[in-house]
Length: 298
Image (cartoon, rainbow, N blue to C red; front, side, top):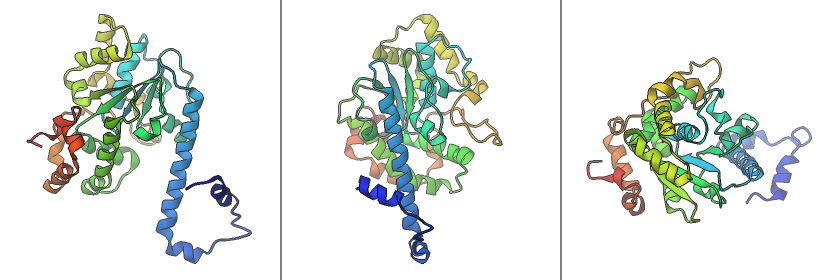
């Protein structure tokens, strides 16, 4: 357990006056790396929680939450169009729908927000379970489509060097754990579950569903603007306003992708499909929100 005393002992280490036994550290370099990573993760999480507390929890707030590459940016843009006049004079979507974790990791200030506040998140259910007043839109996407998209982003923007098999092996259990906790919703948070597939294939009805949940008056003008400005063509034309901001030297033209439905399975080996089916426990396989992803054809 990370107590104050333990943290203070680590903080008080003076490497000049009391240098460590580097031979021992080298022998345990893997453990050292894991410990350093865990401390960094805990530090970021604590700072994020502190920032969230400072922003309070309002009943008009909307949190857009998902596992990566499941329609977060699309839904942020959708809700921005639904809750404002839809102007596109912001530099980046972050300015109107920020992500607490990204602000902490990049040392950015959170923007001042007026009206309905829209927050992006990929945080775990347990990390966000303190929320009592805000509404949460939780996005679901077929694992077999989401993971190839995550893999492409990892290569394009984070210089991931492993192959697809390694990438899936590192993340498949985490996908099930992440989504299972959000589906169980043990704290009874106010959640609307939205499927990426419905956003793509039945967008108008999905917009109405979101409007009903968030108490947004949906006029025909707002609906049409929302449909137009969340189209692939529109968002691709404004790509630098969305998603991760890579270093200046990188070409920024691969974040907005078509996100086709049902095309990802071809990227998986038979062994990976079998592992996917094995990990699909009874809860998530039969859950009303996810059973569509585990039909007999998968």
